[in-house]
Image (cartoon, rainbow, N blue to C red):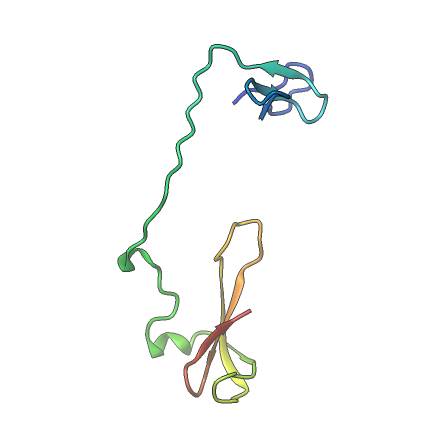
Length: 111
């Protein structure tokens, strides 16, 4: 990680006009520095999750009594009461996903 010598902003990696050369550029003052004699390796890592790696939010029926109960229409049985919880299913800068579990049939939905 490098910082701009003019304004101190973090420099970001960008490609040149030809796409061959790599540059570090400042988004604030437009300072540019060409990367020379630099080995840059970008590793792509994929993650495979097993069933043991998945975190279960609600596992047992006893866990449900501690959840918030809200009015929500169940698409499966028509009941209008559900347990609600939130979980971060995407990036941290995006809002959490709300889950609803019907108090009658146990059908789980989300919005």
